[in-house]
Image 1 (tube, rainbow, N blue to C red):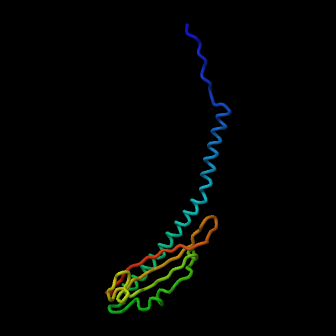
Image 2: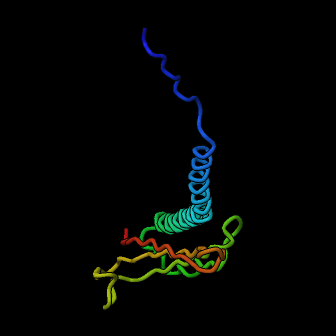
Image 3: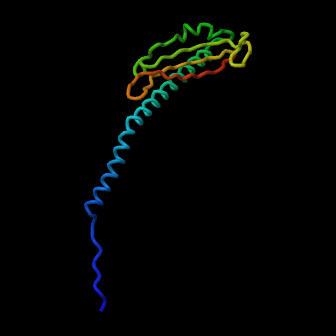
Amino acid sequence: MQPHRAAPPQGLTLVEVLAALAILSIGLVSMLSLLPLAASGVQQGAHRSGAIFLASERLEQVKHAVGLAEQGQDALSEAAVRFPDEPALRAPHEAFSRIVRVRDCGEATGCAGVNVPGVRQISVTVTYPISTGQVSGTGRGTVLLSTYIGAR
């Protein structure tokens, strides 16, 4: 006859349950404390993406104006009139600003190492709000897109 073995205990003791709850609570509180930082990063990424879109949109408008110009006509001679500075844009981008600059690369200083008559450097700068820490809208980020356009 074999000796009777005691059945292994079923379930957890109160001490084990409390220890597990304490460890889970610490993990959850740590994760919750990261939520504001993650939300700020998502918002800043959305603003940066919007700024890139606005800059590329304006750059395409400038290239389109040059493409529609008559042969021999300088579509960029009045760039400040055709593409004026925009200190604030329409909704939903009212917190953004956009600036277009046209630079003649045929001048003595050239454009970033390019010194070719008839070539222009088109730069579009868009600024957007960024948040630092817990305070929103305390800084400005900048996106700069640039391209070169030559005579047709």
